[in-house]
Length: 71
Ligand SMILES: [Zn+2]
Image (cartoon, rainbow, N blue to C red; front, top):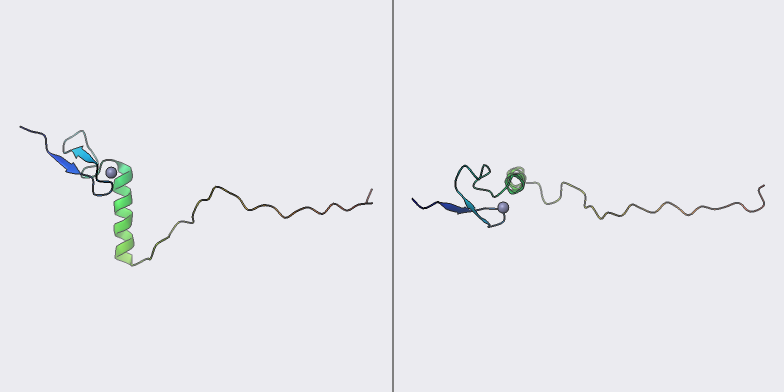
């Protein structure tokens, strides 16, 4: 019997429909969570972002003003 394969709804990757794919029809837990999150978002009608974008850059601290002559 040929092994059934399905496409991951999130990323479109082919996975085996078997015990080897515990997250089917998703390829991974990550894709499952992504799809589930999208579904929740649609249900609630929340537009777009829930998490702030991570640029990886922290805001620069204000420049220090050394006080000359204070010694
Ligand atoms: Zn996937």
